[in-house]
Length: 248
Image 1 (cartoon, rainbow, N blue to C red):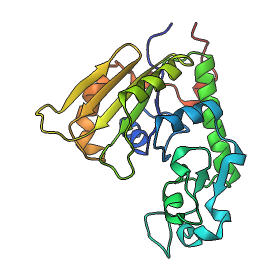
Image 2: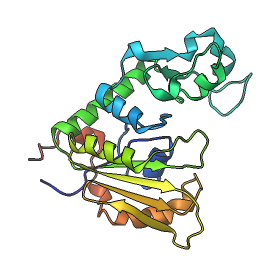
Image 3: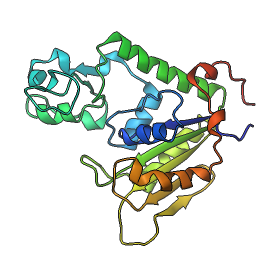
């Protein structure tokens, strides 16, 4: 197999991973996990298995209870200006709220917090994103999957090493890949980052910084990614994936 990474892709769990990869110039096409609100490894595995079924979606645009929340785009203007129409996924654990009692929570914990999937163009965008994952799987294209986690950020639910191992096993069964997990958490240690655990299938680092912005983390991220010998110029763009030969 070709051991050079051809894709670097976000698996969430929030917007940070996609934003950082874009700033590093590693994002060459969209992942279906860009800018989602995911609270657990279960969410990631569920979407990788099942993709998006229209029957599982609730559009805040269609519900009078969310009228004051939707309003105008872009965010983060609060009501009465609103944040924009969102899409709730009824099968994922971060959306299990009763809108009659918890309208605020169900809106702000929407899986597709930045996307109105009632818009056919948006829905087709996600469909194409998942199709790219199918091609990457079928052709065994060498991929570095990235999962960046900020434990101090609002709405975080603990993700354990056991969870990460389970995700790694799932990915290894389907893809030619490595899973890179980075926790951003300020502690009293002097080191700017540390290796928590690593093997041929996954690696877990901790960056000693709570900042959610890219620039405070840029240099450390560059140092970590340097270990993977990624040739940015050789990363595939979305039009090149279908033409890429099977990696046997």
